[in-house]
Length: 405
Image: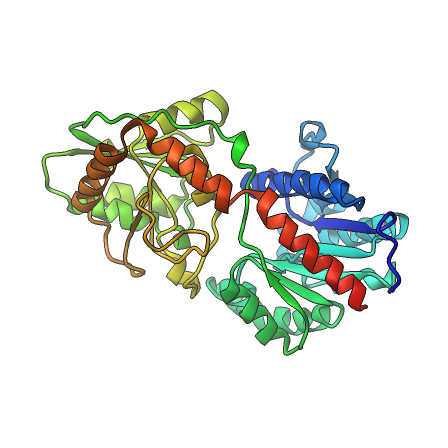
């Protein structure tokens, strides 16, 4: 392909519902902002678009940015049948794909980065219908088929989804994985010898305020969990069971900023630890900042092994690092050095989390780092987790693919 750098166009395309997955939306928005900055420096045109079907008539005006457009294509038929899975897919996928093809035909990008969405696979997404010469690069955040099999309904649908997924991959020219483990998995599933690139998740580190770190020791341990939900693979149940099993002198509190599902609430009641749990629901801004200031240590993902994953690259860990609160996790993150002092590593199994160990770790960490703890973590995040660093390598990969085509 003969490339004129002054006319090179890249399109980022997602089918994510920002109202159901606000964390994903924020990540995509920050990614597109960083892409726009880097592309402008290279004289490359960039556009980010998120096309989705909302269950209700939500207002998207507040979500729009110059770099990331939000398009709701929900039809009356979709909203009527949204509770019936088969009809939901039919009435959701068709308008989503149709709008995507219109955007591609109008913009005519040289490359598309498509955030792969397993729920869109019942339809065959093929941008080359609209623009035959486009280089389609799929971005993957999980082992999709294995994750699908985690539920009984998903397990039944998996063989059909797998066949459709194989057809979708015939149109894909390259793969991006959020971990090296996922990258290798996608290439093995596709049974294709295509180029690949691993880019761990990034964030706009500077947009997160620093936690007010304190070196004073307390007679309590305050844990913080931030997430849009408490799915089984998040492993919050391990913390709850650890609280129930703890009989030490330190008072334990768990603050949950996000939605708790029914099974989590039932477990809290079953364990009889309601007085240890503070459910804040979804909060942001000043209220969330204050919660970070008040807590001692954060809870990362503790059930990654339940998705058959050894590696991970979660957004919550990047937020914890950017804000400057130490955390616990049970998987390998390729952006975290093995000897990083801010991280307490738990075993990758279903055992309860040892609250005494967490208290000892937290006390020693604050004693060692004092009031510089948050700033030290923030600096590390800037050097290893900021999008500005990651996107340079990504653009090198994309342009190399275009030069080869």
